[in-house]
Image (cartoon, rainbow, N blue to C red; front, side):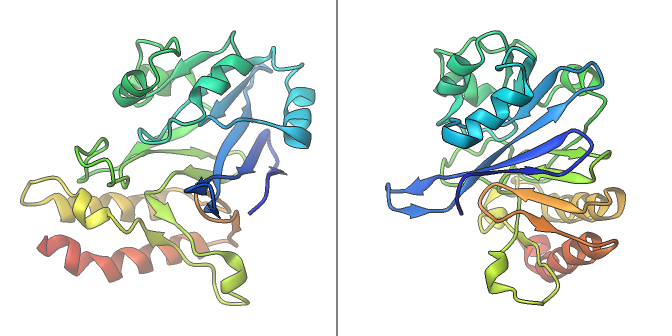
Length: 247
């Protein structure tokens, strides 16, 4: 997984970045750049842009001046926020309550990223908060909750941790797969129907969003043909449902 900018069409670019566990194992990370109907741009997530990737982004965005906002959609992805704020000082930064606590040097908007106010501000995107699991879990090792963002024009889904895919090089010619985050069961809320609500929410996502470009934080960019995303996500949910509903 190396740094690269993927032009997915219709004003959506997915930027694959590097993130090394312990400074050694690169599990990858991402951010996405979206051109709005106004001609301005927003980012989904923060990433420290360098080299050719930075050059491409700056060329697209009038040397960064046309970036109006950065939407940080995963509460536990905070490492690159401060640098992103330095790179785009004119942009409005949206995040969760945890972002403001962990990176206080950034001037965060009072509107949380998951708020209706932000969703209404950016009609180019459809948002969905993971249901039945904690968005910000008290155990900082549990990262299954996030805010998903879907860009209908390019049929691209930007998701951090909640849904994942195995590396494409391991799949060969097999139908692309989707996995639930390994901490999903631990992330369930302490409520009788939390597992059922999570599975029903994910099932609705599979039916509602015709995803062709699956952009997940710690996976490769995966391309789906018509109907494949729905089948792959439903397969993952149906496999996990018995265990999640018994939790």
